[in-house]
Length: 477
Image (cartoon, rainbow, N blue to C red):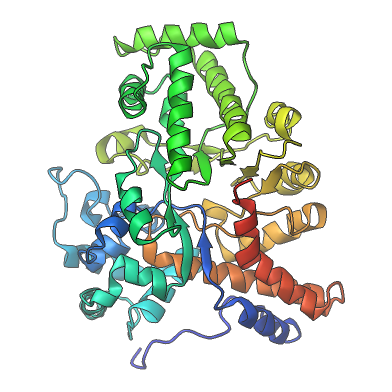
């Protein structure tokens, strides 16, 4: 390939000649709307410190588990991609060599959303002019490196360039939120924290006792009793609200929210707490699952009090390969989707708070079977429930189209949360939102072509999905 690498303006729009012109018009109306990124995992220190990105490999390859997992599937080892402990065997320290391995494997991303996001970043953001390959790796690296050396590519400057109106980070319950305090002074209302208590709600985890101590230190409340544990969680939630937080984030395996009698929950907490001193869970796997479900209900009850939007995205078997997770750390052990049951699982919370004015639950899934069978009917009737956007493995063109087709007829557009990008890769955010807007334009164009919507309604709906619905779904009560 010798010509300059460019991207087709109609990429991801319908191929059908009837709907494509309509989709172009709808997409044009949303293309330049501000980005509201209400669920993500970019490290808050990137914005607080506002330092230059270190190198192209650390920016685009090392932190992106979508990208690294594909290369691993083709035989590349994680240490060869700069992932894992730096003192481990085979750990690659040369960023250029890491980038070469990525470029050499470019063909493996054909047909994947990672390909779409990454080529958008390379061409539209960094001005790369040649397609990645083993032969062009150094040229691509140099073009990205030259771009990020410019102060205009610092994280805060990119907030402006990407038109990011609001972005949320995901922070542990014990976070001191000092970086967010700095940002509130410099960029008020722009970068907001999200409360993530997951490690504290699973007593069988090896880190549980230490995490309870972190919670106690951050809250100033002893966590050696069940009552103190709940009080400390409430205090930290209040601190997040004071720091501008709008939501909580829960990534449990199941969607079960069945509460336990207080005396049973108290006894399980005491047994687990005492056993944790010896490194043993103390309670069975069934009891641990019951306690975690109970705590999801407690988190919902607290949300009904303090107004933090509750985000629930269950159904991922974390660390499918425990040896890889032990060697290379969290989010590296091949997380794999599993089936989830929502209708019965969410029933206790929806019975208690489904009509509560101060409660909002956004449910995400990567189990496509439940869209039309469970989640769309639930979100289509309970006023406190919103249906989250396609997430993780479903954050892909065809999966997003399937989502619209499976859910819209039952839940409508107004009961959806709008798009969330759920990413650690900061520079992929505009690419992800752009893809969602293109896919939505294509779906809406079909409704127009079939005379099921007028064009002005389709344009209005596209703007809702891209911008207005996320703001409404995460608004303070």
